[in-house]
Length: 500
Image 1 (tube, one colour):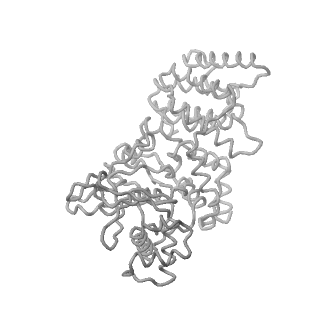
Image 2 (cartoon, helix red, strand yellow; image 1 turned 90 degrees about the vertical axis):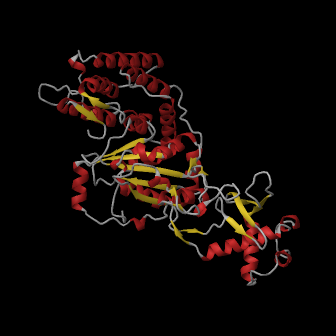
């Protein structure tokens, strides 16, 4: 409450489960409804308030010694791999524990050892306290070079953070605004971006989640500047950055940037979206790869806001959830699926059959990600968790966002899905449940024909009240969205998820 803003716990749960199911989330809805603030607050709550950028051993770093330059070819939080040549056939490879390098750093700084001291002398000094074998310490030239490089990095370190808010420009027509570019006039220079810096920080800190928040993501065509990142999230293939080489033909690392970089699994991307005459619609192939969370403001929420207005103070949430950061990263990489017998399978099959009749069916990826979302949604809920609430969220976040088009195309689909969302599923036995699902399928198919007025989701009673009340629907949130889209398409002749 001290932060000055409030979001329902269910929305937070849905956001977290969406990140864990897929590292790409879209927040859409009313401008000024808190989309960017929520993404920013979540990132600041989950990640450390301060992270020192002091790692000398980033991929491609050059570590000079007295006689030779070593190259960092691999590094994680446990060890660093050094090559004495960039030639794969000629290089001698040495892997050293970071803890051993820190022993050398501690000895050098404690005893004020000058840089012109021989590596053998430093090794002899470290030998009295080292926890490692003489064999490992015998790589004294590597260790001296690494230790002084680490000391230099520590002295020049600066505060970094685990998230970036990047405002998308209306002129973004290529991935250079995301991944930067190799300077054609100066081959030793690579023009980096805040996005690339964040990706490289995420690579260096694999245990911490990093969040890229793309604000107003649809001010430009998303496919033009985001396609490479979207493909990398999906495929796991490296991002290609440049083909720079040294004079001898070996790979170069201009400005410390490698030619290729694998998008780290601890990087989470969230885009905020407003729909108006200045923006572009998302294509179905983009929406299919994300969970889409919609923000709306109710009358009650507006009344509460007007009665208790406070400026937001995100410093009150900074680092409060840091203890969950590593677990969050580990959970996102887990191969999690929802295990609830035939419940999910039956529901997905029903929706697939109806959507297939409308030529709007979903693929394997969507089914897999919906299962993963429901698993994580349940794991973050208490004993009152219900499958229908989680599946309701997934209808609205995965199935409905891709629907858009003219009345001729959308009206039959929305009528069928309205009945599908409304009909009660509960049954007293397995056989009765099977019969019930068949009845629901039959009614949805009949609604698709638009010939039975009793199956119109916007049907009213003689007194003007809704015949199909939202509060009576089995999936109320999704049903509410369907009837909003149906009303819009009948009024305007065209509708989309974001505009309804």
